Length: 91
Image 1 (spheres, rainbow, N blue to C red):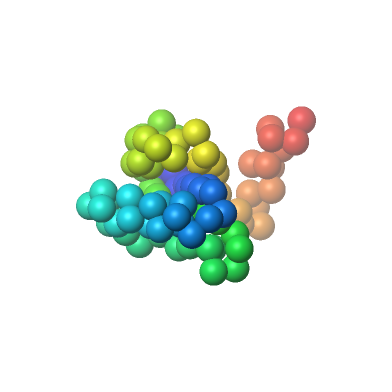
Image 2 (cartoon, rainbow, N blue to C red):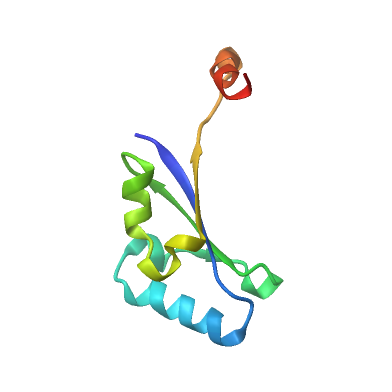
């Protein structure tokens, strides 16, 4: 199953941080409740990992308010013999 890194941005104000954190915690989603936050280092984003079938399903977990500020990155793990897997991306 594909693994994704979900990055969700919010504004760099105390009110925006508080609102984003509250929304994430109030969703009831264990993915969102366990998100990691960069606010204390002036990086106003939340990150979490998700193993799910596709990017559309991954986006459906993000609260609607933040979907237009979300980046979803599919993650792969390469072994020595897997270098040819990267070829299609770089052509």
